[in-house]
Image (cartoon, rainbow, N blue to C red):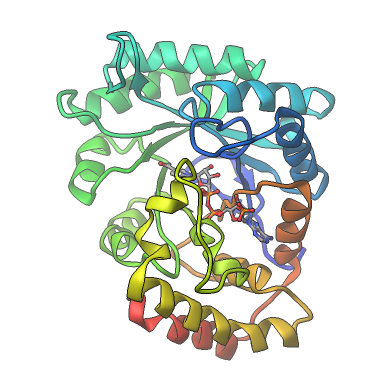
Length: 315
Ligand code: NAP
């Protein structure tokens, strides 16, 4: 592999710079027609391709993604890869409420451990902030789990900069996961100086803009209603046509590496100093195998800049 491994925050957790996003492994509430065995095969394809971080969440299939991962990893040495999961969704009232109450988070970690059939989590993220819990208290509960060895790194996801600062009042936050891609750059730019100063890693989600940055779409695409992409602004109007134009400019760079557009875009993230681990998702094992090859691509500084410039509309 050309791209070096990365350390998460100020911890001893080291992973490949490319992980596997698993919202389409068991995430039947997010995508139509998912097949369990394909999900298991996707996870195995990732581990067999040398990927060492799996990114899941309770929210993906309300535990089903974690259950399938628990099955997929049975034949692998648990210490040879890392699992990140997330929790905060509370259905005890009959509808979904975001809950960061310390006791609830502790319960969520135990539930995730059971579904994943493992005795530690490498990263546990608070998936979304709630409105009532003091953020440092929520993170404090995770710090105690870290001291007990149940989790190795503390993450927060979908927190604004001010919420991150509040959550990290005691310096316990190791990693932040938030949306960032060549099409969505603003969010991460705002929080990045604080993260860098505080040794907090950044894991961007939607790195391929749900497939749009792979170069496989043209203006004629449409999605069925229960596919989350049918509601995404990236696939509509001027944003969509600007994205298609930008992606077409990556094609010659990909061709010169004998690579796909997706592989070159993923290599761009791995060379981006803001990014710690890039976690593309996949619907098929072949996509994972192909994405894993991006760890062997090294862009020249000029190629890196050309890709950056191709997406200037989105800065
Ligand atoms: P993504 O990585 O931007 O796009 C993944 C999708 O692109 C795949 O499902 C697949 O969909 C397509 N694709 C992937 N590799 C491809 C290839 N080589 N060639 C062609 N198409 C390819 O989006 P995502 O999976 O939704 O997000 C990544 C991960 O971030 C998730 O899996 C999840 O773990 C995490 N996430 C976290 C949060 C959070 O709140 N923390 C939110 C969202 C996501 P098709 O085959 O259908 O095109």
